[in-house]
Length: 118
Image (cartoon, rainbow, N blue to C red; front, side, top):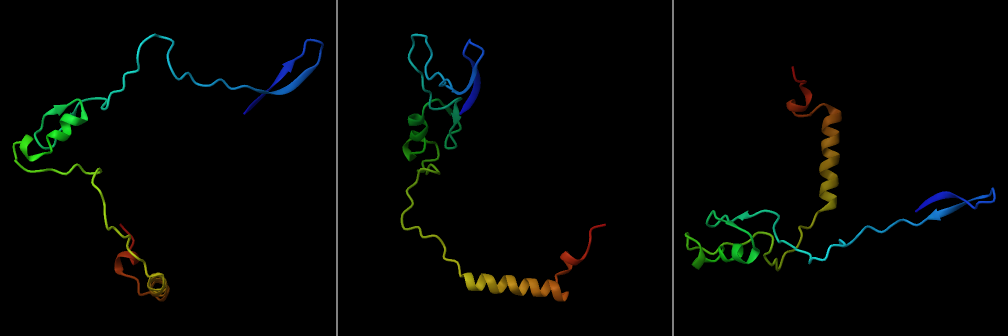
């Protein structure tokens, strides 16, 4: 929100909120919006050719459409089922940190940490 002084014309001024203009969402030109899936052609890792649309790119990942004859998996689009994040043992982590701190304080640090570079 922005504020500015407005002159009322009779020597008085008031401090009011200024309406912020909304960004133009569409052009005034009479033409449709063109949405391209890729800004530039994308190279398929299966056959090395460049493609302009996702459908033909994904078709190259099938065994029948690539020279390797192997089905490829598009990374990032696979379904992850049965994944459970690893469980941390907070008590074991705390004990390891306390042991490391006591080792450094007692001078039992590894030589990599005790030697200064030349």
